[in-house]
Image (cartoon, rainbow, N blue to C red; front, side, top):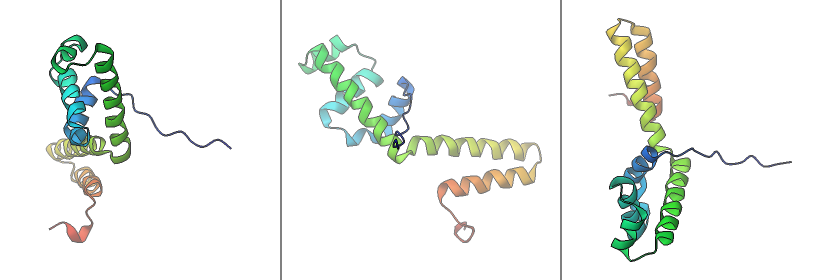
Length: 124
């Protein structure tokens, strides 16, 4: 019997930039610096190599490993996914409220409370 494979994300440049905000402090200082140069500052591998003293291949390897680590953190912790879902639920509630759909607004707010881990007695 085959074990189910871990869910893999298809990480985009934008995803990795976001994950750097959430999980960047879990990277080594050097790896965070290289990831920031590459993803946030949009420097080339050659430019980063000049700044860090690594080879272009070394920079590429650090970027690859760093992206894999960030993705692993997101797969386990799901902080970015949770925040996207909360934003969606808030937008749903806002739209429902604007259209006078109170039941739909309450369902969206209840879903948001669920994402936040709140129960009915913790609302206030």
